[in-house]
Image 1 (cartoon, rainbow, N blue to C red):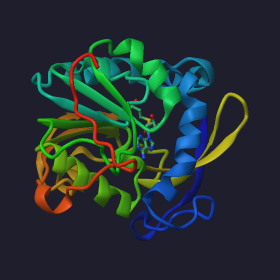
Image 2 (cartoon, rainbow, N blue to C red; image 1 turned 180 degrees about the horizontal axis):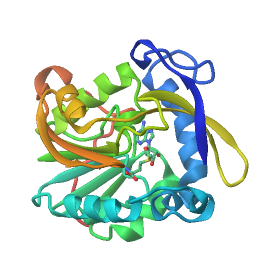
Image 3 (tube, helix red, strand yellow; image 1 turned 90 degrees about the vertical axis):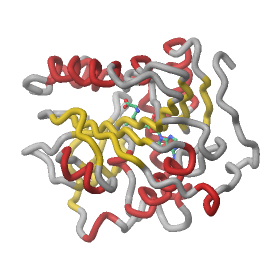
Image 4 (tube, rainbow, N blue to C red; image 1 turned 90 degrees about the horizontal axis):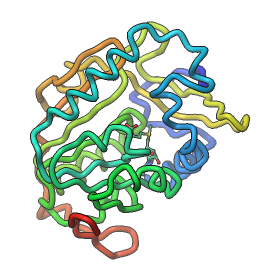
Length: 250
Ligand SMILES: C[S@@+](CC[C@H](N)C(=O)[O-])C[C@H]1O[C@@H](n2cnc3c(N)ncnc32)[C@H](O)[C@@H]1O
């Protein structure tokens, strides 16, 4: 369960005191702790069970079905799902699928749902894959958690490994600012500050440099964009220096 904590001005480029300064990995470290803890209860958000059963979310279930069908309708392709979480959406992607997430707890839930995909634990802002290794990067409910410099790093990495980026995220809601820090309380009572944005589909498409709106609902948006390939200049190794090559079933 979560509630608005404080509103952000100026493009969200200021990390909170909690997350501190330093590079992008320093910023994302508290987020990883949050998702490690949240992994076993993450799907309660999608399914409207547990603490989410008390939420009034008119039309959520129907729209989630529509969103899942839109994900399943994407043409089969070599796809990397970045920040795949529990693979709630990933499992509907078609083609040769690889998925990366920072959280081993999330990946443990994702693994049996993706028996023929390549799963990698790693950092979305330093993708351990080769230039042009995929046709498409897909990412669900991740882009909206990135502050400005993380967004830039993510988009550069997405454009390095693929030509198409599909972003699924939360639609603008009347009870939320478009950009806010939220206090999120997990089932064990632990509390985390999480940065979160809500999108108009057209606005997200424009932000990504122009693209096609694939879903524009009351709860979710989905946009496909061509991402600028910056391969030659941005080629770099992952944090451990090891690069991972996507291959079915490995
Ligand atoms: C809100 S969940 C989204 C999960 C899934 N994509 C979905 O749509 O349901 C955000 C995910 O981002 C992952 N994550 C956070 N920071 C990350 C990073 N730097 N690199 C890779 N994954 C990260 C978390 O572990 C979590 O699984």
